[in-house]
Amino acid sequence: MRLDLPKSVKDILEKFDKAGYEIYIVGGAVRDILMGRNTNDWDFTTNATPDNILKVIPGGLYNNQFGTVFTDNPDNPSRPHEITTFRTEAEYEDFRHPNKIAWGKNLEEDLSRRDFTINALALGKDLKVIDPFKGRADLEDKLIRAVRDPNERFSEDALRMLRAVRIAGELVFTIEEKTFEAIKKNAPLINKIAKERIKEELFKILSSPSPYEGVVILRSSGLMQEILPELEKCFGVEQKSPGRHHIYDVGTHLLMSLKFCKSKDPITRFATLIHDIGKPQTYKKLANGTITFYNHEMVSTKIAVNIADRLRFSKKERDKFVSLVRWHQFTVDERQTNSAIRRFLRNVGLSNVEDMLSLRVADRLGGGARETSWRLEEFKKRLIEVQREPFSIRDLKIDGNDVMEELNLKPGPKVGEILEKIFKEVEDKKINNEKEDLLKRLRTNFPKS
Ligand code: ATP
Ligand code: MG
Image (cartoon, rainbow, N blue to C red; front, side, top):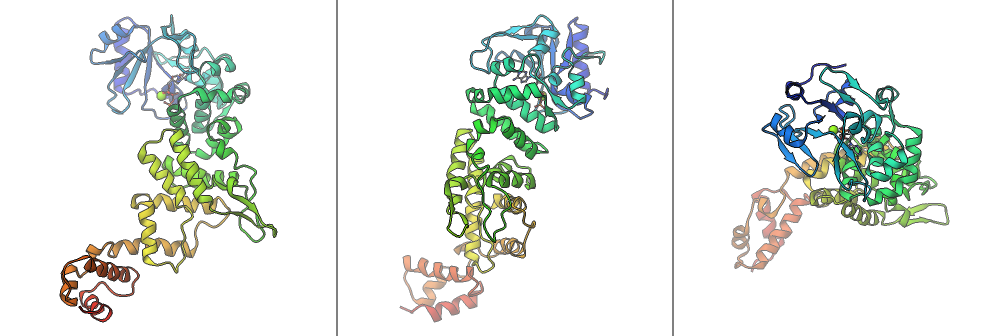
């Protein structure tokens, strides 16, 4: 076991001990220490009431909604230490928030209201592990097991089901059988939980080192049907056609794409997971056996908008998510013009181009194709090239004055129109962006007034 606790953590343990209170490290930190992992998130539980916690930690900040005192964590300033009085939980009215927070009598009572045995471990000042629910054995066996009766615990707080999936994905653990059965049975209760909370857990699943595993568990638990029914519908939708490369049904292809997605960004991973989500609605099988999904990216985009709104994405998250889905069918045809490539850059947004390419590569790999093709490689080169070239009329080596002088024109809309035409020719590489060339073009192609 790792015994070198950070100084600020040791200080808290010592101060409470000196003041005559019990204090324990609880939750994820104990789990991580026992697994030999580093941790930067520290939660404490104590028999001191909030008033008394503040006497021991005078600089602490009390949040009475959670009954928790926060104090600085120098090793991880964005995640202060959290010190909470022993709690017990009374009745629940909305599957998430207990009707009232009540103080617990002792540590055991506090641990018994926690969700899973591996999260119901405590570490005292003497570094002895307190483990009333055999969490250490489950940690050894890599099992997520509800504390006490899983059906009761999930009907008290339905978010716990999604936490089980998320933690199983993050740690690559298995959900113990009875706990898993209870999730399958109670899955519809997840709809009672605030969408913000669901989004938060879903993003954690997608941000973990193995998002694919997390999403597979999400599906087998029955929670996907509740949270992302549009994705569940993609499974079993065949897309194999004579002479075409698809080897999987739509749902499996989406999962495999996620598995191969190189981006770590949860939005990009999410977009990869749903990029073809409109296919079931656009499915058509022709007489020769060919399957088509005409216009599927538009339908997928609509569904992406619905998902983003339903899960309360921020505007920035929503814009990126939707545009990755909207443009995922981009063409890499070597014959396309520079202006077409530029349009692609404008549509996707410069800052999203890299993730758009990650989605494309994942899409290819997730469909059984090779990682790249010469066309895709050429396209990537051209993306860089066109960005070095003039991007707008202002980058032209001539301006309105040159046009007026050369063609004897008065100021007016005509000047702009001519510049526009010249710019288009430069963009399409018909002429060079050199002053002499451009002036010559003006003289030969536009009538002098
Ligand atoms: P991580 O911080 O890595 O996400 P964690 O287990 O520390 O994992 P937190 O959300 O920080 O998760 O919660 C801290 C502890 O509070 C948990 O370990 C668990 O004991 C308890 N807990 C959190 N949410 C619930 C819940 N919905 N029901 C019961 N106990 C919970
Ligand atoms: Mg934590």
